[in-house]
Structures are given as C-alpha cells and as structure tokens.
Figure 1 (spheres, rainbow, N blue to C red):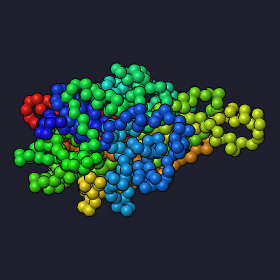
Figure 2: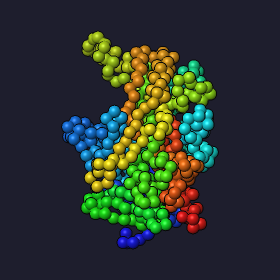
Figure 3: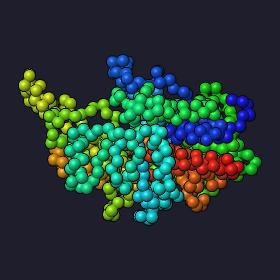
Figure 4: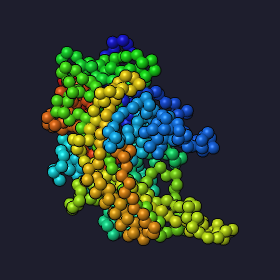
Length: 560
C-alpha cells in the first residue's frame, strides 16, 4: 500500500457485512481497503471441525484455569473450548467495563472473517410486523424503510450466500430464496403436525446459511457436525470462503490484517479523510486514506470507533448531535423454553445426529391478537433427538435382555428454546470508559444493559407456551425453564447507531449514511432501530447490500 494511496472506500471489519461490503463495492468498480483488527487464518491449521477428541490434549475441553485467566467472558460462549478458543479474543487484551449490577457478555472474534467463522448461521428475513412495530403498539420508532424495499437485497444476498430452508408462506416470517431444505427427523415431523392441528402454528426446518447443493465453487455440506470450529470446505457462509474471494477476484481489494482501528479522521470541511489504526503487532500508529468510510466492525465496535472519533466539530462522538449514539442497545432474550420426552420410540429412528441445523417456530404472539402482558414476540428454535443412553440409568436389569431393552426404549426428546425481542430503550447504552484502555491504548467501552419487565414476562410466556405445546404432543417429564441469559450471551447485539429519518433522534439516515458526515456509512447491527426476534445477520447483510448500492450511486454522481 502506497504511503498516501487514497482508496475509494475504506471498510473497517471483514466479517459478515464487511466481507459483503468489500464484494459489492469492488464489483461496482471502487478501489477498497478492508481493515481487520486480527490476523488472517489458515483453515488447514485454525479450523478443527474434523478433529476427534482423542486428537486433542484435553479431549476437547479446556483448562478452566486458563479460561478464567485469559477468557473470562469468552468462555461463557459454549463454543469457546479447546477446539475453538483461539477464534475468540483474549479478554485480558480487550477489556471493557460494566456496572456491578448490570453485567454484559461481549463475545468477540478478531481475525479475518470475524464471527462469520463461528456464527450459528440461522438466517431469517424480518417483516413489517417487525419494521413497523412502533406503529402497531406505540413503543419506540419504526424503521425508515419497509420489508418490500429490503426484499430485493435479501434475495441478492441469499442467491450468493446460499440459504437452505422450506417455504411456508407465513407473513411474519417472509420466505427466502431457498436451496433444498434439510429434513425434519421423525420427532420433529410429529411436532410439526401437532402444532399445526392444535395451535395453527408452523414448525419448519431451520433456515441456515449452509449449502445443501453446490453453489459456484463451494460444495454442499457433508454433515460433519461441529460448524463452530470452522469449515474447510466453505460449505457454510463465511466471508473468507465466499465474499472476500469475490472481492479479491476484482483486483480492487487491499486487505490489511492486524489493523486495530482507533478512530476516523475528518478533514477541514468535516468529511472523512482517513481511518487511524494501531498495528496489532508493532503498535505503530498508521493511517489509511479514503474518499468514503464504511464501518462494519460489529455493533459495539463500530459505535466505539465513532464515540472515540471526537473533535471540536463532534465533541460527543462522530455524528452524535442527537445524543442517540451508544444508546438503544439490544440483544435477544434467551433462556425460556421447555423439554420433554416424546411418545415415540426407537422404531421411528431417523436421527440425523450430525445435521447442522434445528427447527424453527415463527413468532405467533402479537400478530393477530394483542397479548395482555407484553409487547412484540419470540420464536422457538430447538429440535428432537434420540436419548442415547441417559434413560438407561433408571432402568433395572443387566445382560443381553437389559441391553436390548435400552436399545428398544430409546426415547425421543423434544426441546423448544425461545429467542425474544428486546425493546429498544435509551437507558441501555454503551459509552467510552474514562479511565481504562485496551492493549493498544484505545479507550474501552463501558456497557450498561438490563432487562425490562416486558422481557421477563415474555420469558415466562416462552416457558408456559413450550410446556403447553409439549403436553399437546403427549410428551412426558416436561420441564420448563426461565433462566434468563445474561445480556450479550445471545450474541445478537444490535442498535447504538440507529437509522431514522429524523436527525434529532437518530445517527444515520435510511441509507445508513451518517446524518452529519455524508461520506461515512455504518453497515452492521448498530443501525437497527429495533431488534425483531429473528437472528439478525441475514438482515444486516441485506441492509449492507442496499446501503452499498446507494453509496456507489452517490459516489459515481460526485455526491460523496
């Protein structure tokens, strides 16, 4: 990279949206630099999806002492084990603070591809039930666009990424452009039938960014199972396996790893001039110049960069005259649901134990009727599986007859886990900590989030409804749960730089362009005015595609 080379766009972050922005902008003819805080991974070394427990020194677990020392927060994520802990940050290098009574788990991956390497890949469109929710129930603000406006960009992303799933015609969960669906097992097929007949609800196979048929140069998934450890075949969507190579193929991409971005630099006219970063290895301060800047660093990291980009013109952070920057932080609520033993046995075996997917029950609350206790709604994820051997502990006997009985009476267990909408509230926020910095001398975030009564009442309804559905299926030993997950642990954080038509109440316009700095765009979860209840990554990418189209059009007309 030349000393004063000026790029058409500087993209911060290389994950799901950063990789997508790089692809869209380079394919449109722009010269793009992508800055990534971490290193470039080597799939043959860093991905461990095919390793077996006996190949691991600790058989796949990790020393609790080591985790507590370096990854006190990251270890709360179930995937941060011996196979994949190197894909998560060290909390000792990347601290943040919270109030003692308002904890938040910030799960992060700093490497090329970001969390697109470890994400759960569940991919759902949102509808106007979500985007225009404020008009329906009076809380918060509507999105400044409609689902019809976003639909062609959803389709553009889906055709490139590859989303397997089944069309259901449910208005609150618009269908995507699908690859062939994975199959429901027999326990799930029974559950689907009962839910439709007794409740009028839909149970469908999860919609997931995993290929069930070859797509361009990516082969279909071979069902090896542990996707969170990486995918050497590129059969699930990650930016290093698909969007970044597409950008590289244009010859207009410059990828800069180990670039820990601190702030955006403005010129005398108040426009973005460059992005300042610290070299992760040498600690040297560097600058990359661009005619436009696109923040895709993740919800909280992009907002941290904007808050740290203070100047005389922007004393409270970049494009923050509204005071909304950092506020309205949301993460889906999780921890409500139920589990039970289905009235079917081994003769119905169809387990597909390694299928990298589960089921989905779309939101049904506050669609046709108004719930008396809470606003918005939730969907269920989960699935059915055969209990392998656990049921045998309560069975008397020994020898061949006992073994046969254990095999013959293997029960199907059905699980429903709710994922619910968190309301966008000003008092849930992040700001710069005035006293602490990270290992690269950059001020860290202070994050303060708590659940409202609305979320707690929704959580209870998740458990009650899941129990009701299981009992309607004839399930036994039904056990509900209301274990509210710590904010952040769903890893669906959105908000903090929301878009809107009114500059007095929002940070970005409807094109995700800063109201006050027209050559600055934000293209990750920070832009969400509300959280909906669906997994957010597909929507982030569709929004990024739409924002890129606007950026390119404005750039080519000389408006940026």
